[in-house]
Length: 101
Image (cartoon, rainbow, N blue to C red; front, top):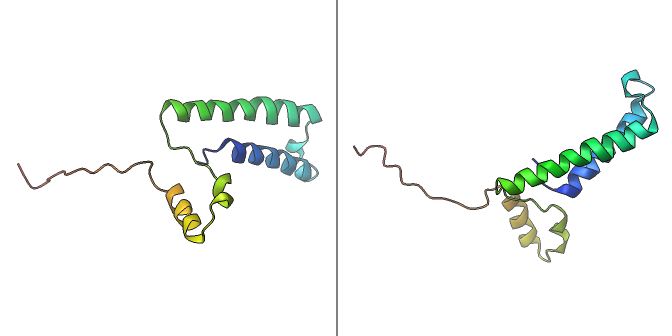
């Protein structure tokens, strides 16, 4: 999951542009302009992205901030940030003791 509002919105708009470019090859992509931008991009995708972000907040999921990478000054810091994007928010240590009874 991307978990970033900005990236999801950009991908939604890019998909609508892709539909425009492919509508001469795929007839099911032919839609009115208002269906592309009002219904698909703003209402359906925008509301879906909003509900997804609210759900992530409700479930206390780790938010990803993909756009702040360039503000980190060092190369090592950028690599740490990229690695942390794919890790959990916090580490919980368990001692299962499977052989004890």
